[in-house]
Amino acid sequence: MKKTKLIKFFFTTLFFIILINNFSHGSVNFNSFANKQTSYLDFLLLKLENKLVNRVGILSSQMLPSRVQYSHVGIEITYDKKHEKIFIEVQAIMDKRRYTKKKYKQKLSDCNIVRNLIFYQKIGYKFFTQKRDLYLSEELMEKIFRESFLSNLTLNDNEIKFLLKNMLVKVNVIHPVNKTNLVCSGNVNDFELQ
Image 1 (cartoon, rainbow, N blue to C red):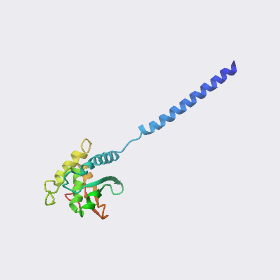
Image 2 (cartoon, rainbow, N blue to C red):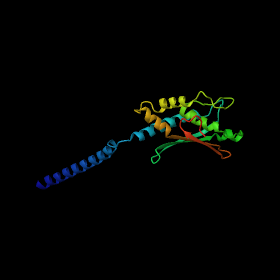
Image 3 (cartoon, helix red, strand yellow):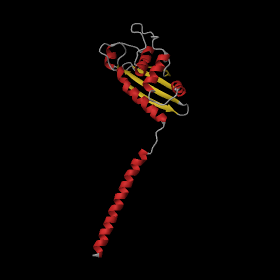
């Protein structure tokens, strides 16, 4: 009888040790995620990237094309801690099927239109002349950027100005047929990227 009680005690104790070990191991993993803190900068970069990725759809093919048509647009955001700069790179690949048939060479306006549509949802160029439309000014661009990307964040005016000054955009328009690239870059709300 003592032997069976001892065996029962042994297996019961072993069972509780295994149960507690598994439970504490599981909670350690969960707690390690629950106790991690995210920096405000990481949160801001993630929000910015999500918003931009959602907006690239504005560059999808049009039924009646009024601008260059793109088959793929990708966005990458990086933060350079040393120089305290946020780099946003946009890769826009022109539609191969369309530009195999139609001869077209990329222009600086194409580069700026990609930036304008993604960030400000406005073309910023006149339809027929392809000259810069003064309606989309730097002031309007800053206002749209604040409302679209920085709303619902607890940032003061100085922090927003700092972000705008240190947020650089590089747009790469890639021609898939003749394999040429047109690159323009500048601050996120520069009137025109160069």
